[in-house]
Length: 639
Image 1 (tube, rainbow, N blue to C red):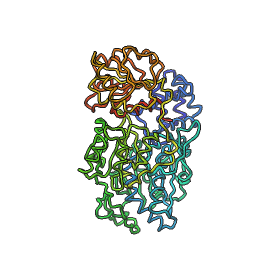
Image 2: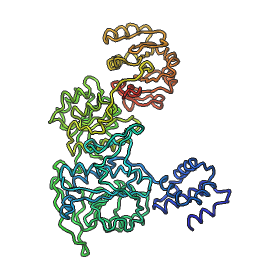
Image 3: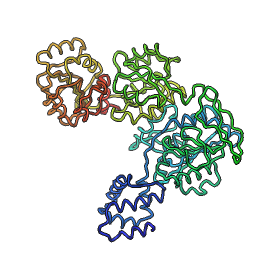
Image 4: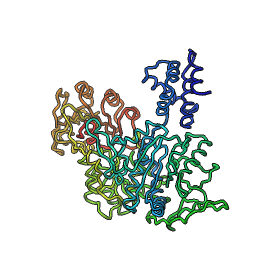
């Protein structure tokens, strides 16, 4: 039964429901793309369908079926865009880039020269919105310029969704996406937008000229390429949506478009092993035709390649060129890392991200720059991850004092925004190879790929210190808090938090928003405590028993926690950042909870020391050393 016939069957049936429409829509998309949408995907299909109906102003499933029948061709394409997955990012699954750099690229360079065309042909199948294509373009541009400047490349990107192809062809992405790219690959290939699109970047012709895009259904490739052959094809994270027959058909069709010695990459979580295909595995989810000789790595490197199989019907093959690998490359090598960070929670999560299973091991930890220098005397490490805000010696001071030609490469992992010219960009200028914005604890693990990719890229390429891309320079900003009189900083603390309070006070800007410290259970002890800190810090600290209606810019107020509610009343309409130090009492927690619209931060006391009530509503848990910087960014201080 055709789609039009099936839809017609339902029209006029007042009992038609969403499950009927979901079934029809799933069938249309499956027939167009091969993507299998079954019962497990039904909730997703229904949710996106309801969004589509809302956009069209359609109220009922019956009305939508009528609309679908009347606009079957155009609406089918809209459904295809709506229901195909677009989740991707730059340099995804970086282990493939490692394999490409050391095991594949030297072979392809040699073959391109032997053919005489001196051009490596690449197909990024199912390229979604183009991040994969431009990742490959940046990668090839960098490595060919360094190792084979006489060899060029061309990348063809395709996707079943025409809207995704348009997006990719346009080559415009939010600046935050580009931050995921290792610094050494960014180069001068991106330019910042202007006016309304100033938060976006556009790919420059230096990359775009190497990339072409077109819609292609992988189940209906046909004669699309007119005899053109590819050196390697990436078709990653697509087969999870296909059934076995479709995978076999698709693989055979794609490999027919490849040179005999071509390489075929599928997603790391996908495998073609065990299928009746004329292929052999030569690496992590990497395949070639059977009986094609694969170049062997140097003896010091453990190869992941499966030896070529012999067969009477084997296809004749030219001798494979030898590969001269960089000596330090070994897919089984564990990269040793010194982690320098004063956040116990961040260190715990980094140990999960940089595990041996992922090719890393944190062999030492330091809480500040002084400890880091001491740990480097005790341990031989390949890389250092470095925070910026730390006690005793911060990250910038450490770089100024200790970084030099013999120092292991340094990658910054910090809560400071990368656009901060005064701090983050300064770290790159002082020798750091790359910079990763530390996300909140809630989503740090989702950033694991970016962290691992940048560390591996830094390790293998020995990125030159101080590399700052043109696009990074265009986003450089200075930290100046606008209208500080309309902002409020609030800290809830105890007398035992003296060291932390002194640190916060010392970090405050010259013209900082009014800073309030509220203490619980102090009574008469607050007066001598305040006098002692005035003497120690030489700052404008005022001990108050009433909250001033118009607090002064640059002033610091000490008060009993009982006045917290009074400040809240005076702070309506004022942007407020609050930090809670230590483990407050239940009564204080209830007062803090009332500030539902504030920027709430908790002191990071480690993954085991958390207050459940506040953890559920806070923006993040951070070390005290980062509070002033993070609250300043919240106030919109980067301009």
